[in-house]
Length: 168
View 1 (tube, rainbow, N blue to C red):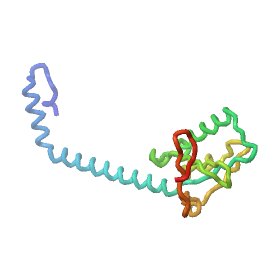
View 2 (tube, one colour):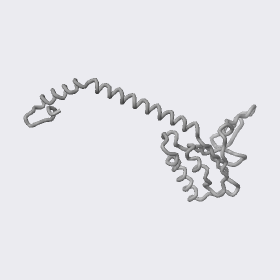
View 3 (cartoon, rainbow, N blue to C red):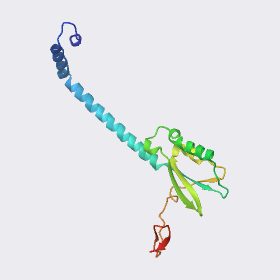
View 4 (cartoon, one colour):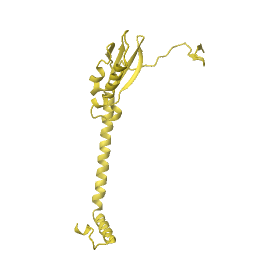
């Protein structure tokens, strides 16, 4: 190891020769370390992907249905948005794609409702009441799926340029 150090009397070519000699003598160790590092990286990548899939399978779904007197203030909306922004931090150490919150707007019994879907670890944060005039309903995974609405034997409406609807 002492001959690798660059002293005042050694030239650059002598150092280059000693370094290449060291690499040639230990080439199989270097190759083995590269293979082990690649295998370790691949195992960690597979583990992280499986962790993301498991977290995506166990998400919590909550419906927020407003009452008749629902009229939120700007401050209430800001608090609700800030709480939703804290969900990834509250869900812990999860992959980024599994820690997000999905918001869907839909109609429940003629009322506009918001469906929140997020990580199961942050279910308590999603179930908290954001607004005083909103009912929080937990939705089961099997019967809580969104289904497209299809009308049989009814032609679609065509909206003209001036905003009027016409039958096709």
